[in-house]
Amino acid sequence: MTVSEFFVHFENELKANPNLTNYHRFINDPKLYHFRKSYLEQRMEFVMSQLDKPGAKVWDIGCGYGTTSILMALNGYEVEGTTLEYYFDEMQERVKYWSQFGDLSKLKFAYKNMFDDRPEPGSFDFVVAQDTLHHLEPFDKAVEIFYESLSPKGKIIVTEENGNNIICNIKHFRERGFKRIKKYYDEKLQKEILFGDENTRSLKKWREEFSIRPFKMDESSVDYIRYYMPGKYTGENTQEIIDKEHKLWQKSAWKRELMFFGMNFSLIKEG
Image 1 (cartoon, one colour):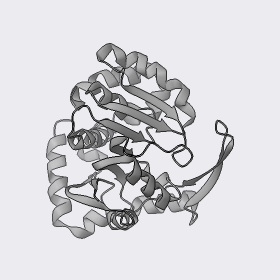
Image 2 (cartoon, one colour; image 1 turned 60 degrees about the horizontal axis):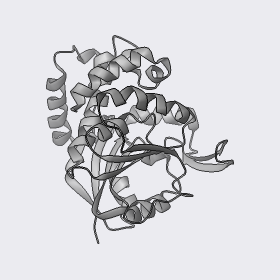
Image 3 (tube, rainbow, N blue to C red; image 1 turned 60 degrees about the vertical axis):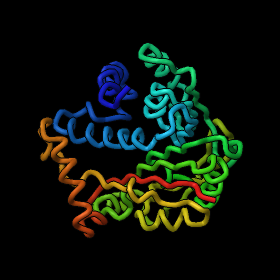
């Protein structure tokens, strides 16, 4: 199932599920529809483009409502989505809905903390982390777990907010100040959890964070997305905008580092 085909059924699901609609907000406001939908589609397209081993085992860490997990499973991947989100109990309803469009027998979700319940060594071919890395603390231990969990030449597929984005940094500072790492009490696990409070980084910083283990950045995978404002989108020019942004971030270093909202990249396990 392609991302475009997936979105046809996805929008129908959103219209019938208010909780999900408020999580994936692209149908909430007609003026923002194409702007938000394009961003989500680009990220999902990126993830699917990086899965280059049919039928492989995928760990979707911080899977949220499981949207990308479902897409991957519908395309034949064996997927485990893990999360610590309060809406975990709602995810089986999603599985029921999506099962009418394909086989989800190789999809499972689990409520678990990666630091307490580590995967078996070499048990995954891919790790998918969408807006998740900036929540993982202590991050050096997370890197160790990713390395151990991946099979030889395994890959981490990342979609993240650009930690250098000026607007985002102002917004985050207003919300949390300088305190980027906090604790909260998890009712299900009955324990305190350490987490990054929008502790986003630049691509350069992520390189440094992962350098403690033999991970190699796949330079061909790097992409920056969302530069233009919502009013630029008409619904007919989405691909034109994407193409312009792709050229722009490669041409202008300061716009890439300070003005682009999101970034995608993959890292390959070596050694």
